[in-house]
Length: 152
Image (cartoon, rainbow, N blue to C red):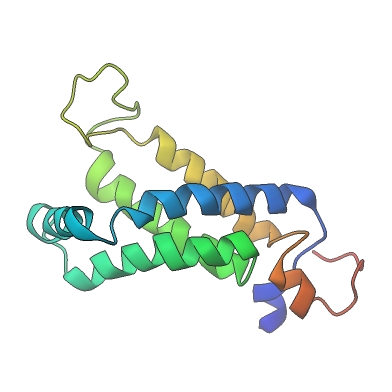
């Protein structure tokens, strides 16, 4: 089981994907941690979406802690799967009814966006779930039995 979760090849593509995705999602999530950003997000989640507050906290955890773990490449597959699930939820419960396109011309209220950005996150996190963390990852450092060995 440990092999399936932490195994990775020494590829640069995974490295670039996980670092860029991790940084973008961390910035996306960090605004939900303090002050007005937190209260607005909790209100939106519990009152508008009518979802339990625990899911709001899990969302914040995946977007902040999970993205930091992606950046360093620890448990890359688990964090990528968590992000994949989170963004499927975002599309399903928030963005699907808005449509594909972002709010490029300001025709919708602030925060009302389509799901095109979310599809990019799904593609990136899906690739990481399949490929692992790549070079410069904690997964490669700690869990691959022989550095340089061809894996998956």
